[in-house]
Amino acid sequence: MKIRPFEIFLIAFFVISAIASLIVFRLYEPEKSDKEKKVITKDIDIWGTLPAEVMDKFLKDLSANVDESYKKVKYTYFDTDSFEIKLTRALADNAGPDLVLFSSEELAAIRKRISPIPYKNVSLRDIKDRYIDGASVFALYDGLYGLPLMVDPLVMYWNEDLLSNAGYLEPPKTWEKLINEIFPKLINRNVKRVINRSVVAMGEYNNIKNSFALISALTIQGGSKMVVDTGRSYMVQLNLDSSVSVEDNLKKKTPFFNAVSFYTRFGKPDDFLYSWNKTFSSDLLNFLSGDLVFYFGFASESNLIIDSNPNLNFDLSEIPQGGVDIVRRTYGKFYSLGVLSTTDTPKDSWQLLYNLSSPDSTKKLAAYSKMTPAYRSLVSEGNSDLYMSVSFKSAPIAHAWLNPERKKVDKIFADMIEDINSAGSDVGSAVTRAEDNLSLSY
Image 1 (cartoon, rainbow, N blue to C red):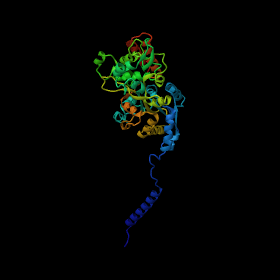
Image 2 (cartoon, rainbow, N blue to C red; image 1 turned 45 degrees about the vertical axis):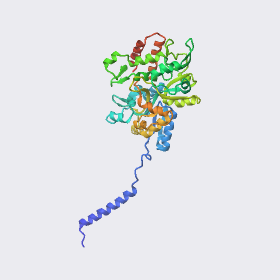
Image 3 (tube, rainbow, N blue to C red; image 1 turned 120 degrees about the horizontal axis):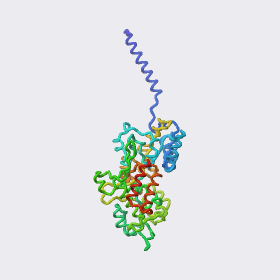
């Protein structure tokens, strides 16, 4: 049978195709899995306010169990007081890092250094669905400033021996029970009103480790959003209860006023709640020595307390709430990871950002930090650890605010407390001056 030219062409085409396919098949190498990929190709620097030992363990874990290219990532720790200044100077000298790992307390101070993620890339709906409510502190007018990682909520530590000896088997859930029922039984003052044992450390500022967080928590519990980002400026709203109308705000005592008024009562010698003064050492030291019944600290401090006094019989719980309050609130220090707009390795920096802020990575970092991950899905899993379980319960009700540089806020709040305690200023005047000074600090 005679083969036609067209048939010869078809046979040749299929033979050539088969040979080509065989060659491609022999040369083809399946794409590596995510764990096998070299995700980091260049050296990357991260600066942050999270302790170095935590990040070092975290990065070592990733390089050993995920990808050895994480060895290219270097982390440098700075304390909160010096972080913004050293970052600004380094960037001016073109010697800054590629990413920053910062808390909500540094956000306003370093905001202009960070490259925000546009809402077209991650919507407000995505943020709401993905993270617990308080993490929205990083969602500002022009975008999301970094990806939220975890939160360290303010909780209440309590001396189990002192409380049980007074007949109480659990801590107070409301401020009313604490001050009206428990306080009178546990306060130890002599006839000259010298305090031998304190119940609550409030009323002063400089000798209370978390005074900023505690005043913030009391104000947030009063319904205040504290500060709002308008896009052009920061609007201070410490004395505005966002849960009620403008008319009702004018009729009632305001959140910041009420918080400061309550807080300072514990430092006034003539007040029923007198429990603390400036002659005491820090509240943490007094709690460790068994001379303070309740200590307000961050959940991550549990290991510090255990290491400092292994014999102290203590526990922790959510901080008390108002007796008539429907919504529970506390203060929380949220952490985020952001890319600097000045990085010279943008591709690798953004890749690293998404890698380190994934649910799996965040869960590891939060565990090393003794904090709670910011992902709703991870928080809903809960935690069975004796102390971390309290952190997981407090995380969903934790909120932060856009404070200016912390050193400035501490000075403003300390002066406010001093004006009330020593200068004889009424609470209203001192609070107003503090608000005005705060507005000028941004």
